[in-house]
Structure formats: structure tokens, C-alpha cells
Image (cartoon, rainbow, N blue to C red; front, side, top):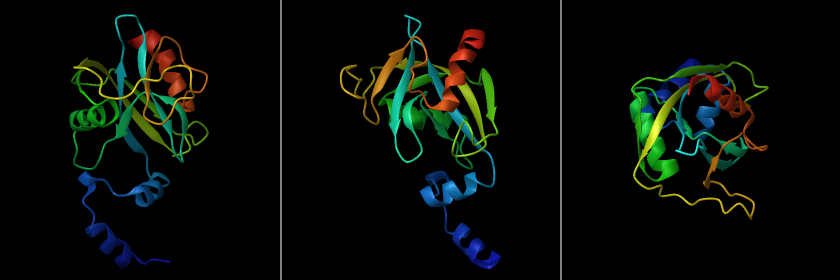
Length: 167
């Protein structure tokens, strides 16, 4: 088992703004809540933009978002997430329109999350691939949905209910 001095040495070598690596991230998620910035994008047809995620945590559709790093603003996280997951920039409202807390591992296997939901508009063309709705979706594909898809990540299914009230 590591003693405090070993942990302190490891932590001193990390630049949190660059990310802390998957293993350390997973470990910290067992200890403390994490804060995410979720991009809620609705088109003129009343559909919401979702991304498909298939990794060791999830296999399903989700509202794209990202974990805010230590020392990072939520605006910075929104911009980085948009570039990475959508391939374009977005214009986000300056403050979240809803704060969703999920303290249970039942709904999110990663642990206790506090999610800041931001209304966003696309600023340019999406640079990521759209799901063709014929083949099974693959990680990173995007699609517009009017209603929550059956295979949405459990913690994000609540967001569709929230949209009816607050979007």
C-alpha cells in the first residue's frame, strides 16, 4: 500500500489541466464527486443532438459533455468538448440552465456526478460522422433524436424529462 509521501510525489508530477489519466481518474471518482459540463443542443425540428459512446464505461447514446478539469473554466471545457466530440465550435449560454446531481452508482457506474447542463447552438458544420440509422452505431457517431432512444446511457435518460420542463 502507498504511503502519503508516495501519493504526494505522484500527484506533484501531474498537470490536472492536461488530464490525469484514466486510472487516476477512475480512482478519484470512487472518492469524490466529479463535475461535468453537458452540451444540450436542440435543432429547429425540436430534436436533440446525441453522440454514441462505446467504451469500458458505457454503450449507448448520450448528450455530449466532459469532466471539468482542475483550474479549467466550464466555458473552456464546453469548447474542448465541442471540438473533440462534434468537430465544430458551439455558442453556449454563459451559465447552466440546470444542475443535475446523480449521487448513485446505480445510474452511473463512474460514481457521484454533478452535471451542469448548458444550452448550446452549433457554430458551423458538424465535423463528425452521422449515424446512418441502418447499421449499429459506432463510437463517436452523432444523431438527432426527438425522444430518448432505448439505448441511452441511464444517467442521461433523465435529461429528456428535464428538457420538457426547462429547455
